[in-house]
Amino acid sequence: MAALRFLLSRSSLSSSSVALLSRGKNSFLGRGIWKYSTAAAIEEPIKPPVSVDHTQLLINGKFVDAASGKTFPTLDPRTGEVIAHVAEGDAEDVNRAVSAARKAFDEGPWPRLTAYERSRIMFRFADLVEKHNDEIAALETWDNGKPYEQSAKIEVPMFARLFRYYAGWADKIHGLTVPADGPYHVQTLHEPIGVAGQIIPWNFPLLMYAWKVGPALACGNTVVLKTAEQTPLSALYVSKLFHEAGLPAGVLNVVSGYGPTAGSALASHMDVDKVAFTGSTETGKIVLELAAKSNLKVVTLELGGKSPFIVCEDADVDKAVELAHFALFFNQGQCCCAGSRTFVHERVYDEFVEKAKARAVQRVVGDPFKNGIEQGPQVDSDQFEKILKYIRAGVDCGATLETGGERLGTKGYYIKPTVFSNVKDDMLIAKEEIFGPVQTILKYKDLDDVIRRANASQYGLAAGVFTQNIDTANTLTRALRVGTVWVNCFDTFDAAIPFGGYKMSGQGREKGVYSLKNYLQVKAVVTPLTNPAWL
Image 1: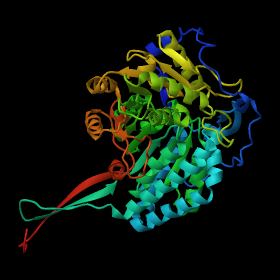
Image 2: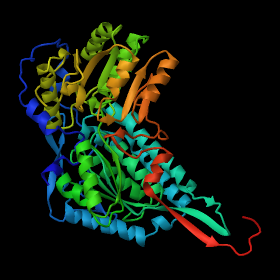
Image 3: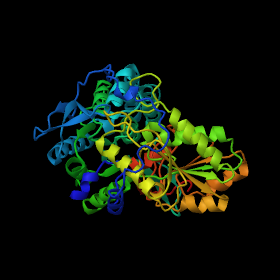
Image 4: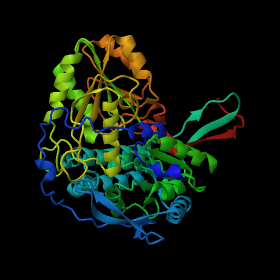
């Protein structure tokens, strides 16, 4: 059970890494160029324009306390202070939620509604989300630390778009008529899989909610959603809106709590038919094992990454620097597909490093509710400390710390944007998922060199390619063993574009039509034909 403490952690260190990182020195402090203003980090935090009204579990259409009566604090990453105390669900609460979901599926109206009626409820929900855009965005930023402008202008609108996308699919799911060698009528039925257990991370709470809940409900399933203990608030708020839109009781249940209790209970529950998990690779293995040892439930995993961002020798360096900066530092670097291995051709390497350092120095860090802020705090103290340990490891291993490398201010979980050059493939900062604002820049000689090194990773989630040569782009897109390749762009997340990884970055795909397969069973129905006019 000790290993389950990592459940829902977006990335975790291996035991060997912890041992090495613990030997890190503070010799790097004071190095680099400190041009960041600490004013934004030490000013009195802006009061969020929203109140916290929902802190209980949502089970069978009602907000209820945890069976144990326990609560846990959710913290403001700007200060480390308590925002609210949230009900702490455990195995008993998961049982209650699964029972409600099972009854809603076996006896309730949701799978028996016409697909059009289900879509209408989902469309109404998207309308309500748009109506409450600002409140939802404020909760997301307050609980997570990401810039409010990002939450309000990008993530909440995309959340609504995703639900409209899946609402549109609800009445377009159908089977086939299959010709057979003989006098038989053969058809396939695409049926909802049943009760879906879903475990989402803290880095994109709302979007991961949409990626999982949207296709599950469009296909007629019922859901028990386990939120990350760091960021439970926005899911509770929008789930209330879903019920206002007409969602029947028991169809969507939300349990907040910790991995070793609520998370493991959901993954191992005998009455859950399918589990979807987004989080670290280490925890994904645990989820897969629990699912297999219980009722062999179907599992979808979206796990860690160490994505290469390849800058080719023909690149416009200024544009490449800006895109590589975005690929790594977006969302405080807390992105599974972050371009965290920046491979730069040796011809433009020195110029790229100098400009990447200058761009990082210019990055605006501070209170995420303040206009113009590019980077807020890391999500919590654990993530904050882990990133700083990786930075120490980078220095100790001989990489050049160009800028950053320490906390910003004295309050909250702010880290200065950090850039390393002269990074080697065998360094921890080049191999393991840091999940923070730390850019590692590696030099390569030619395409064969960068393809071999980019693929020499346990991960295969995504990659970026920056080139003006279509032949180079085609060579790289086919050679890279990853689930997504962005060419001259990065982090383009359309509702219709599938997302998922190769190797230890997971199994299955989310978003797009491919995600529907995660929540459907295929049944073959064969009926004899008597004296058929045709076959």
